[in-house]
Amino acid sequence: MMRSLYTASTGMLAQQLQIDTTSNNIANVNTIGFKSSRAEFSDLMYQTLEYAGTGTSQTTKSPTGIEVGLGVRPTATTKVFTEGNLKQTSNNLDLAITGRGFFKIELPDGSESYTRAGAFKLDENGTLVNSDGYKLLPEIVVPDDATDISIGTDGIVTVIQPGQTQGTQIGQITTINFINPAGLHSLGDSLYLETEASGVPTEDTPGLNGLGPLRQGFLELSNVQLVVELTDLITGQRAYEADSKAITTSDEMLQTVVNLKR
Image 1 (cartoon, rainbow, N blue to C red):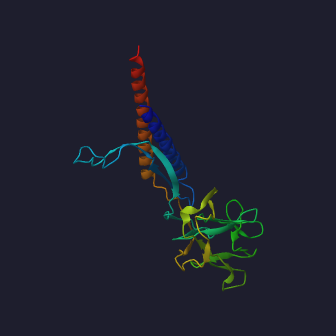
Image 2: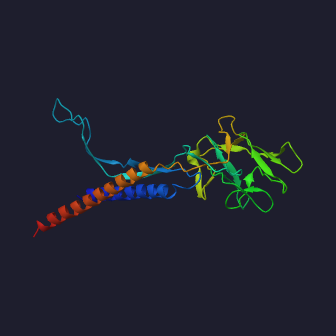
Image 3: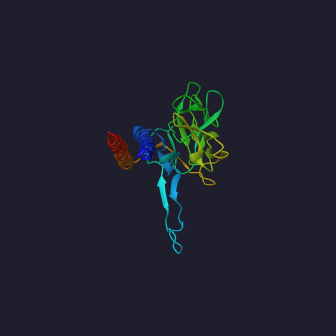
């Protein structure tokens, strides 16, 4: 009975993490470029009361043994980098990556981060930045007199200036790939940081070497599927309630044992 108390408590903690993860996914259903997370668990070590193969007589052996599980533990919360749906915005500075890849963003301290959110804007200097004012790398500076800006699927940026009929190339946007995107560290603000688990970032032209091409005038929506998340939320809630009931039941059984002494 004491074993069941501790076992059920590990289940409640695990289901709390499941609900926390699911809640964060649902909260970010409208976050541009957001990638959902999946909580993963594994069973804890087992208490072996009788090993399989233990002799039960001179000529027979136990085919299964007796092992009692001691609960569950969280092992990971994995980012799922499936592509979200694309939304057309008709804004020339909005970009979406159709496939693998990340935009490279310069943080205020000069370090690099990575994002799938392509809602870019121009700052006071004409530099292409994200919604927090962090520069897109390689740096793209749009001339003050530009009347139109065009970004190709390969990331080449051209502008039309007064008196010109042909576009002038002012730079090229490159994208970044990782061998294990799930190993990236989530910084918040739709930004990720490189880790040892993610592997070294490789930079290339969009559309080449496994990187997805760019789509101007589109944004990648969150890949959260509300039906799945709501189902997971209900499952987590019911499992939490069941574990709570197991604790209550074990407590009542212990109380019965204590009352036998009276």
